[in-house]
Image 1 (cartoon, rainbow, N blue to C red):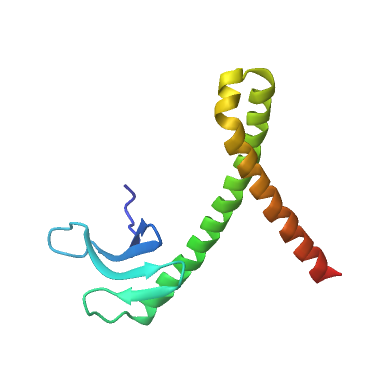
Image 2 (cartoon, rainbow, N blue to C red):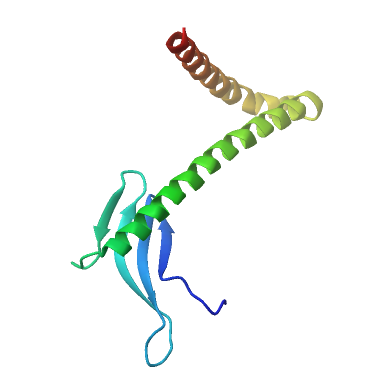
Length: 134
């Protein structure tokens, strides 16, 4: 562990995080983490914990973390989509080269419906974008 700990710790959860203030300035030199807030990244809500008031510094650190977290999540979303493209390509290769008739029978309808649904959404969204441009 590094000698210098951050002043704040964010325990990530589904839609945000629990925010803790980190304290090592006590008699035992133990690390103490005092929960100060709960944040929701999706709606931007910051709820002070336990009836406390957050300082301007607290709010600034929390807002900065939320902005950075949103950027990380957006990058992950795009990365997941590119992985899906890779999986589609691998699935195509599998279906063409290795899949048995029984395996194809098991997955074909589900794949065709999912691909049809995806194609419909992509075509509609592309048409919407072209209409806005033109």
